[in-house]
Amino acid sequence: MTPTRSQLEKYDAQPIWDIAQAFKRIGPQIENLFERYVGSVTAPDWQGVAAEAALDRAGKDRKTAYAMADTLTASADRLEQGYWDVSTPLNSARGYITSAEAAGFAVGSTLGVSLPQGSDPTPALESTRAEWERQIVTAANSVETEDKRLQQDLTKLSAAMKTEFDAIGGSQTTLDEKRFSDAERFIFDEMKRNINSDTVKMIQGLLRKPKWYEFGRNYGNDIMTALTMWGVKVAPGQAWDHKPQLQSKFNLKTSNDFYFKQPGTDRKVYYDIYSNIHYGYVGRAAGIDSETLIKGASLGESVLVGKNDEADQITMRAGIDLYNKYGPNMTPEQFHQGVTEAIDKMEAAENDGRDLTQFRHEN
Image (tube, rainbow, N blue to C red):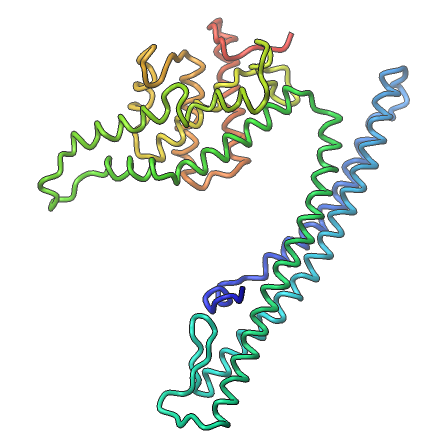
């Protein structure tokens, strides 16, 4: 399908080039990192079966890392070529449009070219018009074709890179560590999607304070309606209660399955912390104030929100704080840091002698 004029004008090929250069820098860094990693397990004072196993794994990981670096280099090369393949016809299409309009022709939103206003539609003029349109459309179609080809090639390279990343991650990550990371990514995507949902938009509208000219609006009734909508959405078993989804996604069965291990630590958290963080973050995005969210979830065995304890409070406030700090533009890295800080607070509470059922250390 031929791009529109607006799409041609907005298309920015520069990020393709920038990503290619970033990939070229990352490849050697990965190789260097894994050389250091292998060096760290070949210390002369480390002997025995454990040392041999670690060295064997390090060697396999280094081999995979080099393959990953090669894939990054191949991706960078394809991106560079893609940049030229796309930007050349893109610049041509834009140039043809500018030249055609300078000659008095009009170029429409779908790249159709019209004769100059008030001109005599002679065969020669019509031929010129048709040629301008042919050149513009041909160049625009080339942009579309090369963009799709680049996407297809990068999809294949991305699949290869994912396999290589998974190979390294799989050698060093336990099942419940993987569940922790996967659940974190899952709830991050849920949060970013749900803050733009129709439900959130309706609640925002209901909580918006009336303008001076909205004489007939019952603001108190609107607030109650908004909070009811919110409560129904987050009620146990409803769309924004993610516990059933996580249980199904990770096939959780035994009591230990429901505790996910923070990678690289001995700390485990109960699987419902993710929905609690979502509750706080999306609730603030909807315009519900922090204390109302916490009080609404502190009604004990309420039909709408169910039970909550100190760990619930910590994780709900983590979601609230994340929205207050970053708003809708929160990055995965910022979210990960917020989750880590919430776990730090749960651990501190346990160290103070408070009993938190949602936090434990690995035995």
